[in-house]
Length: 356
Ligand SMILES: Nc1ncnc2c1ncn2[C@@H]1O[C@H](COP(=O)(O)OP(=O)(O)OP(=O)(O)O)[C@@H](O)[C@H]1O
Ligand code: SF4
Ligand SMILES: [Mg+2]
Image (cartoon, rainbow, N blue to C red; front, side, top):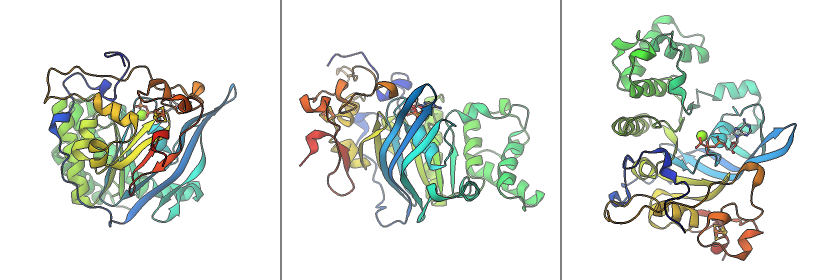
């Protein structure tokens, strides 16, 4: 493998700015969540993007995961691997061209894919809310932050009184570490970190059980990133929230997540608890990602990156999607898709090398 070319998972984080490094393992002790109630059980979810001028493009294929009460699930993978598409599928908020073509998304025993749009509306924000990728930059510049949080509450509960809304806005702001006295200020009067906190307050407006945070720290400086992650971590413990954290930063995952779904080219490369992913990864992509992670215990070591680029949806390799970049590739990989193998317990990985 050549060094210094291609992309790595940390490519969006400036050099040296990752919030953790390989040297900072071992992974933080995570609570045993195996007995916590299951909130979301996604099974074999596949999503296509359709268009008049091209055949359907499979952006997500056969992805499964389980999310339990109080759990923080990290979803990692390079740009374009389907993280946002998978998350939008959970809320059935895909763009017009997106189609969930198969699978189940069970939430507290109900398959969200069977619900009517009206039923789905009551799930969004009240049960599952989302901090959209880049949303803090989409705040309305001419409305105060307090107004925008009030709107989030009123959209989903028309019967709440004005004074209840005001109390709730103050409570939400304080919950995310912003003084309630700043409710009448406008987005430009907030720092980037405060705007992201306001987005988290909005996501919490209807007291959901699950919050999806799609790259909530991108574009924030490293100190503010750490504060936002700490806030999410505190909130999930305090409120018993389950959080799905989409990120490019493996350091972040090691720090706060309990389990990890590594996606590549729309499929599950590997899925396991955080300790397994970092200390016993079995999929070559996970192994190569970890090798591309800065190692401060050995400052002389050169940064290794994964050569090449993730596949385009309209040009997927016929066999394993990772084959063109895999350092363990062999003949079969070029023409046969690997199955998703169950290793020990809930550890899943899709690679021919793991066939028993
Ligand atoms: N509206 C759309 N129409 C057609 N293709 C789309 C659309 N939205 C996304 N895609 C394609 O689906 C694939 C997955 O995109 P997605 O945004 O889910 O990736 P991602 O992992 O979230 O990437 P990033 O890390 O850059 O946010 C990409 O190839 C993308 O080009
Ligand atoms: S199936 Fe082959 S190309 Fe794919 S990850 Fe495994 S060894 Fe690499
Ligand atoms: Mg995305």
